[in-house]
Image (tube, rainbow, N blue to C red; front, side, top):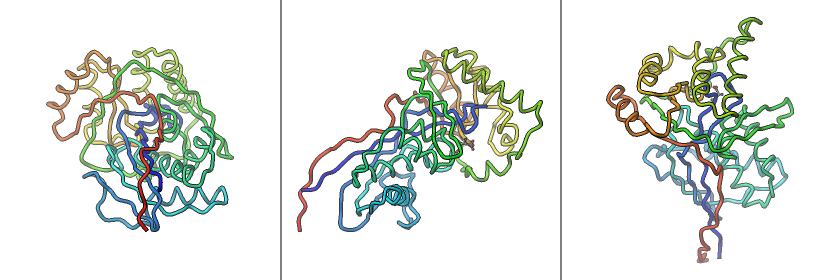
Length: 306
Ligand code: HSE
């Protein structure tokens, strides 16, 4: 008999405006995998949006699982992974962080690594390079994090934001590395003070669940959005129209090109309908924060025929 597990990882949005590389929020959109031991590695993409053709040695989940096992001096056994995803690639909704978190869980399960939550936060953030998306996918809810030079992550975890989040997902992709290339490498002191005061107010408003101020400070970013705006389809129009339709505020989701509005729960469907009419080339998706984070469940034991 061999075991079979289901691993569910929420996608996430990062930054929420000025919380650059630090603030993350998990979303009710998921990467789901079923995993079982098998004599040879096999990864099967079941969703339409996942690439049909790929090489195993380039697959992020395969590489993360092997790397995680190696860090603990274990050898990753081969396995069969079937995956479905509601997270389109290179759109700024945390598909790579979710894949990293999944790969770590697979190694944890199959190599019996007994990783703590803190280990998972550290490993996933180190592999992603920043802790915003990864911490949100591990813990669920909202995360405000800092990672030191040794890769130790400290996270303040905020539950139960009572608001909805609407994604404006364009057809085009934007790789994070390209969206990072346009950022300045340094800021003058006065500018940095203004930028960090916006980030401080955003973090405080999130902790206080002061939704009007969350919206206001989501729109105050000076660290990255002014430099990325030209890469984003309808950046200014989406902010304006969302505000007119009742959003508290709108920001780039991660590095973009998706944008995200925070809205009162009460206006969800009507807001989405208006935005669908106004931005027909975007996919408009109503989400909530996921509250659970990564979840692993043993789903069955399957007989192995030799
Ligand atoms: N904080 C990251 C960025 C998120 O804005 O570049 C995307 O990985």
